Length: 425
Picture 1 (cartoon, rainbow, N blue to C red):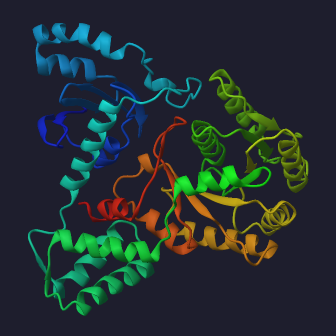
Picture 2: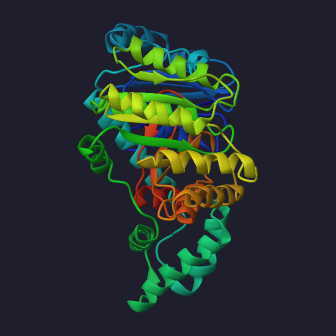
Picture 3: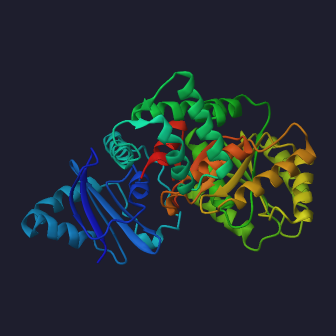
């Protein structure tokens, strides 16, 4: 038997069956706001949900089970009365089967329902608030340091970053001569410290920078093998298209078999969605720096606003591949460099970032990674400290979190969101 629950927009569970998955809060936080019903595959299980009025019905099991669970919960007679309502609610929303979760052929360029947006946002906030459980009333400041250190390390935050964060918070509390602290006060202090330690992204400012740039604005995607650079590039392309920018894609991964074809598929799907996305490739075995240079010139000539440069995944300890990245950076001088990393990787990711920054600085001492796109966030449970580790180590902000497999599955995150995730049970 899987897991089935019914909850309202305040996050109050009104019915529950089966064992609750550890990652339930992350699943709820990644619900697709544009759909009243949907399903997808998570950790070899099928997550299905349906929104009906003030309630959400959600199931997680090895086989599709939501329909039967809702039927049992509501009773056969009430189930029939909902069928007509569901047909109306689903009108205009194509149902996507879980088997097709990885297939991005159907791109939804429509405007999300404001009612659904409000509802799901409320559920997300309620869920995060409900999950916060480190405090039981107020806590003595003398007890706080050890408890916080243990808690943050359990969240996958590195020891050095944990030490810095805890010491800065304790210093602020000492300056104000606070002897005991409530959950609300502590979260405010932590958010304040994080905002100083981690830079943030102003997405509107970035879009304005692209629009106001003389010539084509170049964005280069870098990272190790298998983290989802090409998929992340497609998501950023979708975001830029939504903001009325003309996008050109350069296939500069001339090493991995299938890399060019993967990008071509994304481009064709965008075209099916009614968007003209430019594409440049010169095949495999070519010099990636030269391919990027020609692509930028072509995009400039054709009047595109922004070019997205896909590069080969490379391990940080492969000197020849890192030297190739340095060459690409030196010749093309991209306007923005996005490091794509995954939430599943542990402390090794910090070494990766340092080596990539070194390769970038070898091309230009004034440059480094400009922002981070962290993928596969929906597949980790509550060890979300990786967000903090990567942002702190690179001194670069988190541009987006990848929270699913479709092109719209990007989530913005700020210091308050990080605090809520870090401090949950």
